[in-house]
Image 1 (cartoon, rainbow, N blue to C red):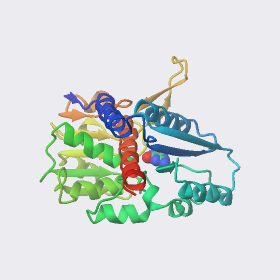
Image 2: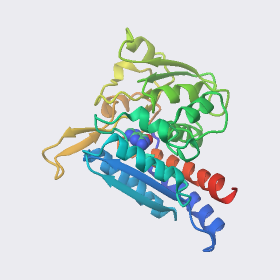
Image 3: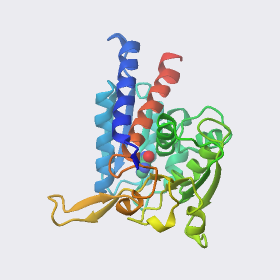
Length: 294
Ligand code: GUN
């Protein structure tokens, strides 16, 4: 079994981005600038956003974190989005999901200028992605495609099974894997909560992307020998022996599945760091389009 080390790859790509930024700016131009909006107190979201901001520093980007209370109204958040859309010093921004229940996520996503939508969640970017046109790719699927590419994992003609059909992972990764591109050209099956006899699909899969949010869901008897496992799950489970009181596990049962697969992304240290790197890659692209080449 080979580990797909997302953390190491992400550090390599961050160094590449930092080198490019320093070459472009030479201390004379302003650097790329990412803003992140965090609403509420979700502890996992707070960690993710902190990682995003820290990674900006590593790459020589400027970053702005806008933290708002749980009881922020939808109108207040729409106003923040409008200001960020209009702020010429911000190249791209994200609104961390999930949002508190009283805020309509779709409404917020639709309000983001697609040219600054470095999460790739706006339907304009999603539609372009689906048609193979240049677009900001959603960060997690983009990170997965980068891992497959840099680890030279053959995708063309393979049977790929995606578990989960969310707008931000399952649905877009199924499109990217099937697109006529490299990596791509796979035969993709998208399974979800209503799929019958799900293991019949996963047992035939050369590559499985599991994005269900169910701890240790994928077991050894559900995969074939030599499969590639991309584990998108980041689940907190109780661990009283730890200072934090929890530990992170993926959607795949690592101990079981790792004895049978050819490659696997660990949790933590797999897909998660690559998501952050992809966001920075998109922000660098936004900087080039919105600032350098304006
Ligand atoms: N919540 C979980 N993943 C993501 C992501 O990639 N971007 C944002 N904005 N929120 C998320």
